Amino acid sequence: MDSVEATAAGRPRDDVYPQGVDWNAAIPVGPVPDLLEEAAARFADHPCIDFLGKRYTYAETAGMVDRVARGLQILGLRRGDRVGILLPNTPYFIFFYFGILKAGGIVVNCNPLYAERELEKQIADAGIELLVTLDLTLLYAKAAPMFGRTGLKRLVICPMAGILPWPKNWLFPIVRRKDRARIPADDRHVPFARVIDNDGRPAPVVIDPQSDVALLQYTGGTTGIPKGAMLTHANVCANARQCTAWIPGARPGAESVLVVLPLFHVFAMTVGMNMAVALGAKMILLPRFDLEEVMRTLHAKRPTMFPAVPTIYTAVANHKDAESYDLSSIRFCVSGGAPLPVEVKAAFERRTGCVLTEGYGLTESSPVVTINPLDGVNKAGSIGLPLPGTVIEIVSLEDGRTVLPPGEKGELCVRGPQVMKGYWNRPDETATTLADGRLHTGDVAVMDGDGYTFIVDRIKDMILCSGFNVYPRNVEEAIYMHPAVVECIVAGVPDPYRGQTVKAYVTLTAGATLTREELTAFLKDKLSPIEMPKLLEIRDTLPRTMVGKLSRKALLDEEEARRSDAA
Image 1 (cartoon, rainbow, N blue to C red):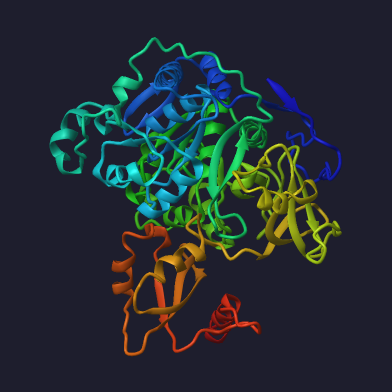
Image 2 (image 1 turned 135 degrees about the horizontal axis):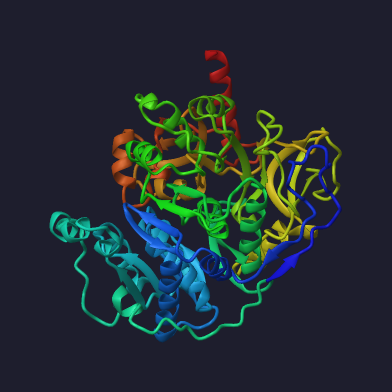
């Protein structure tokens, strides 16, 4: 495995950097599947996956990955082909994620909550010909219409019953019969059993970690138009290693991670899966967030690591029967996806005795860039210090180049081995975002004299709702389909639980009416639940800029004034 040498330029001061963490250390990188192969070699008989009680060791997981990789090659997968994964948190996700990469393919993570039109855009843009999903009607009903609408040629169908422990695996086809999709028996539908019916010896594929793309991870970037961030094997591997280095007290082969964040999200992919594999940790997978199940799992399975978003930590800390659950096993918690309120951090730490630390990242950086020390100074409101080998620079908002001194506000820029190769088929946007060798994040920040960074504003209009990115433009396009809507602005307004809530401001045709419930019903097949506007305000007119453009900023200023008056 190669390594990336960190540069001394922009290095944080030794006296503020966490003890036991070397910012200047070489960061081992290689093909992403090597993370699993190394763990399987060291911890073959250790538990790797625990899914609703069904367990797989590292040896069993690596063996299944080999069979998936070989099966995909037999199906015709070639080096560089994009393969979509439309799955919730299940063992299948891990099998196919590493299997696709080992076979030489590129993973494209697809959100199972996507509306059909969103999935269609992503499949078409990435050029996906093979998509992996479950035999559940909820998912298959979205995937099947992609035949004919896109270049999709085949669906790999994974049986839900096949990953459940006994007797659930036996009862599922009977009790949940209505939830199971009717799958046609034709060449376009490939059963999982057919994929793994081989000797588990994939043809070797030569991978250049620095140049070969491992993932197209879709993001709205700074514009809200979905595009695929090309994350190389080196990017993804480096970020897993950087995060591992941030926890010098971690015990390889002895940790366990509760993975409730969806693995199709880049934060969970890195911190919940890749870092766990790098540590030889057990991954306790939950298919979705259900507070009662999370509490039972924390109590019964005693994970030592629990990455999550602020809304989850809020829910755990404020659970009505919190005192009846033993949460003392948790040793390491990193919050990401949205700003962590100081009161949430304090409440969770009081409840668990664990230090809850906030990190920061974005899809284009694989994603983690900074984290507050797990053992050291956590500054309220700060996103922390840069990971090993990572340089944070605050540059002038006027020229986009001049690096500003501590205390001055500018755009947060990143340099490091985790920074993407660029955007898929978008050279102009790549050149803008990666200008002067820096990743321009679109976030306005200030750095203090100790090297801690504080986000103070956002250039982008993106809404951070429960740790998920919601892009106003996408929601606005869907709302504009309603025949009564004349104009629309969508914005994120503060929400004590979600971080931000999606609010729609609309004007209507003369004489028309529209309630939030009616709008929700209209948007049901056009937006995912997380994108759905929770608030609706009907107006006679919407504010505009001096050049006549609709002004989101004016509405947000009004919301801020309203909150100030109420306080």
